[in-house]
Image (cartoon, rainbow, N blue to C red; front, top):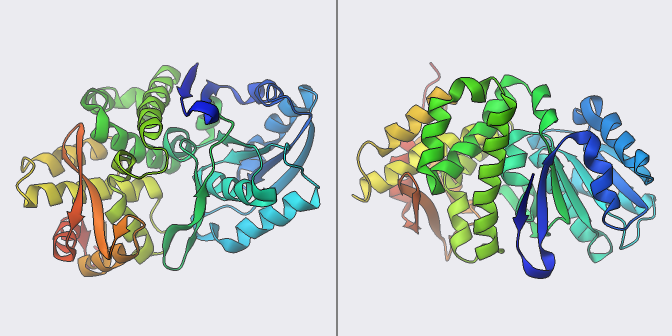
Length: 360
């Protein structure tokens, strides 16, 4: 099964399959070697299967293994990939294959964009969050003390290969984390998907293969359509940041890794829906409707141990700010997102609806 991202000369497919089919797809690029980069968690689970598939296709494979974790999504890890690629003497036709979740894909993608001013790049997302979001669209980069993904580049992959069999190896917490981004896609573009997620939550949480295929395909279709319309986030693509202004701020205040990204986005969706309610642009029930769907899927809708004022202050480093004013993509109803300038006081009030200063 394939979903096309139609970016003219940079067009590529998102391929849904099994990990043992990776080699044939890479070989179809017309190359004889590649560099496979993964992290130290995924390497224990999937490196041998991926490498065997590539070798079976007749490819020479060099392998790099990097440390895993949001707190290690930094300059040092990115630089270690750059040095590793140079050490194996890549040339400008050598594809770099990223095997892992969103952190690994962002770091490897930015290294591929940087080395020799750009190497071919293949995304092989192994988590649900990466399959439905991080691997599609060409955003790469790393975090700094000032915020998430403040250093990076747009570098589109040659293709995305989503091996659905890897989802069976995720912990329940990591799998549910990905569902936070799935809910985001439903909130921005597909009310029927949100209803389906709640109705079919037993199949979803049970990781039924047909349910997983439906989720990944539909989310990739939604994101691909937005990326095609606005590749470099100059306009409509900002809707994909729904839930992320407050979500990223929570991650920064709590420390990267304290809250999983999909969890932060889910909480952010509820908080940002409160912005619309406060402006009289949404029904009062919108935050609770989104929260009910998240809760049905086992995701949090609030967080303790953080002050709303600190969350509002952290949005000052958001990438979406312009002239010191934060532009927020917030839901006004299920299936519709508005992008507008939001004052600090509004952000503080919204954050207060999803934060509790004291730990329970």
